[in-house]
Image 1 (tube, rainbow, N blue to C red):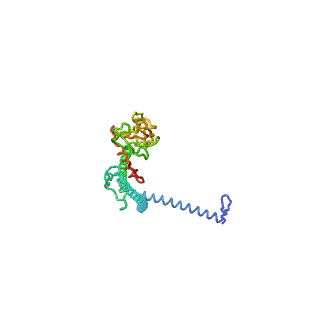
Image 2: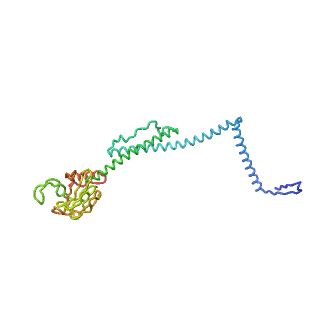
Image 3: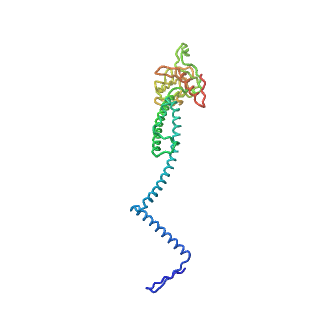
Length: 316
């Protein structure tokens, strides 16, 4: 296409040569400008009409606003339904946690019924019907309250179980010599040195010299000395006026003030002091009064027999 532009005043002309590509670009540019102008005009006329209250514009504005509100409501409903389903899953998990908490509370010595949290008033049943935002907020508040109560209860149960574990670890139920056979039991016997009847205040475990002596329970070493009768002796305080005594050791590995754990190697079997051969003399004293150690060791054997995967050692 050839376009000739003539300027009569300047008495000259100019020719433009337009091919197909240039015509398409011009058409697209013109269409774009026309569309932008139309959109700007529409918005200006629409906004001006709404502000000025022209007939028909108010109802049109309500229709547009209602459409936007309906779209927003649909979006909120979809999100609220998704959150409500998630909330229902959380409520189901809380029921499982409460059931587990009741069983653990019973093991800890609590009344399982006390662990059961009362149902919150006004709560919505998730999944029974679509929830309103207010019902969803109320259900979330009830779930938060239930979770807080369960956490408090489980904390108390954990504390009780921890106390029980500590108490069990402080009771002398661990045999002080591994696989040791009891020689002289607790009670009256013929003294092997004097040949007269006398009270034997502990258990004797015959063993080779150097055999490890183990702490029957955790505690604090309160005595570590050489005694004329007991030889190299160790006493461990387990609290609650409970003390264990280990006598005739050939070597002592602890000193006064040491903290020891259940089963810790504290000394070696020997024959020091008033002894006729290598053995461990083991005593349990409650408030300074000798007790039969077999009662404590048998309790430990019974407890071991109740643990899964373990067998209680035979009572000797």
